[in-house]
Image (cartoon, rainbow, N blue to C red; front, side, top):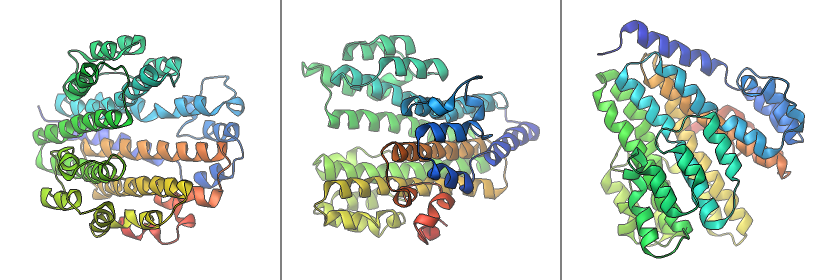
Length: 384
C-alpha cells in the first residue's frame, strides 16, 4: 500500500528538522581550533547534533580518539531506525538496506583481526551492541576466529550472496590470510550488493520518489565505479577487463562506454586524464600533482583529497533533494547521506588534531563545502 500524503509529510518533516540540527560551518571553525581530542569531544557534547550520544555523567574531555570515533560513527545508523516507523514496507526496506551498509565495516574489521591480528574485538562488540546488525549474525561474527567462522556468520543472510564466493576462494587457497586486494574485492562486492539492491527496490516506488532515490544512488554508483576502476588500475595492477568487470550494474551519468574508455586507457596517466574530462573531473584536480611527485606522503594526501572531492558530489546530490521541495523516502535518505558525510568530516578533524596536522590544510579535506571553502577558495564552484 502506498504511503498517504500524511505519512510522506511526516518522514520528510522529520528529515528536515534533523538536517537543521546538523553542524554549521561555524561549528567546524570551532572544531578546527581544538588542540586535543578531548576538546573536540567536549564541543560535540554541547551540540544538538551529537550531545544525545554522550552518556549522562560522561567526561568528554578525557575521551580518547577511538572512544570518540566509536561514539559518533553509529549516529547515521541509529538515526535511520525511527524513520522506518513512518514508512510502509517497501520504503522501510530501502532504509534498512541503507543502514545495512554499515555492517560492511564490521565484517571488514573482523577480517582484519582474523588475518592480521590488528584490531580490537571489544570495539567490534561495542559497535554491534550500539547499532543494529541486519545482514549478518552479529554474535557469530564477533566470536569468529577463522575465515570459515565468518562464512558461518553470514550463512543464509543477505551478505552471503555478496561475499560468500570470495571468502570461499580465499579458503580454497589453503590460507587464512586475506590480502589487501582480496579485502578490496570483498568490500566492492558488499558495496555492489547494497547499492544495486536499493536501486532495484526504488523501482517499486511512485515515479517522483523513484526518480529522486535513483538520482541519489545513481551518483553514488557513478562515484564507486569511477573510484574502483581508478584504484584497480593504479594500485592493484588490474587488467582493463578486470577493472571494468568490478563495476556496478547500475549506470547513471557514466555509461558503460565511458567506463570502458577509462578502464581500457593505455596507462594510468591516460586513464586519469580521461577521468578529468568527465562530469566528475574537477575531483581529480589535485591528482595530477601526485603523478609527478616522488614524495610518498604528498601522494597519500592527494589520494585522500581525491576521495573527499568525490564525496562532495554525493553531498551536492543530497542537497539537491532537499532543494526540490518534494516529500517521500528520498528526503530521509538524503539526510542520512549528509549525516554519514558529516561523520567522515569529524573523523578527518579528529585524526588531524590527534596527529597535529596543519589546520589550514586539514580544512581543505573536509567534504562539507561551506566548512572547507575558506581553505579551498573557489573549489565549491563545481558542485552546482
